[in-house]
Image: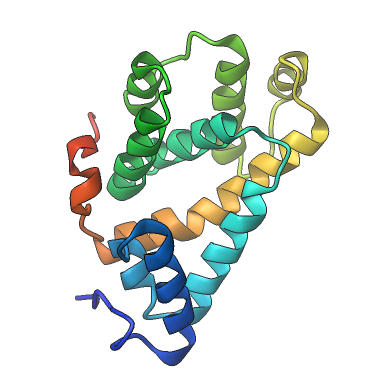
Length: 182
């Protein structure tokens, strides 16, 4: 139903984003190619992602948030891509597996982030005081809490678009394909 655009077929406003993404990945991933139908959505996601990458959350913490959200909303593409990224960065396989299986994490700080992320999602931003305190007690800050909101906002664009367009998992990430367990 949705077109997998390339630079030539994409609406004008999306073309520079496709070119930049191709330079970064060596190809245009399906989600970007399909989001290109709406240059505004694509630009919003890419700009939001750049902002999220500048937060005080570490790269690993950002990936924990993304995989927590992606498994929760069942975004097949995000789970595959971000599992591949974590695995290729040398992250312990048991952490990646726990995130993919929606299990508690052994690292108490990362587990506090995972629990807090799920609480923010479940409460649409409203979080019980004990869960907020648990997040803070794990060493996170109020700033980090708001950065979680930013990450969820950015990845809502991506996960919802990926599911709506049924973006196929690209070859470099197929070894990390994921299917939700109900």
